[in-house]
Length: 80
Ligand code: SF4
Ligand code: SF4
Image (tube, rainbow, N blue to C red):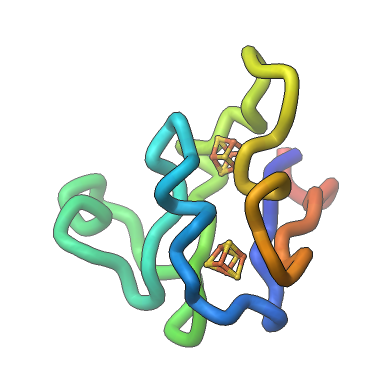
């Protein structure tokens, strides 16, 4: 399980600012992203790396979903 950002994203960056794991990256990635050695998951909108996201397991809310003004973040049950 992980979170997935869909095409409703307007690239506002609110989710990335709130993510406690720094698991959310701007389209095509940034310097920090490339240092992890991952490939971009979207060239159009923000994306979440499932390898880093812990689903806010230690918190009482899912931060990215809570702050997204577009409801563009979904739970992706296809990912472990
Ligand atoms: S669920 Fe939590 S850890 Fe995962 S991307 Fe969203 S804010 Fe970050
Ligand atoms: S908060 Fe929502 S609209 Fe803003 S960048 Fe994140 S997913 Fe996109």
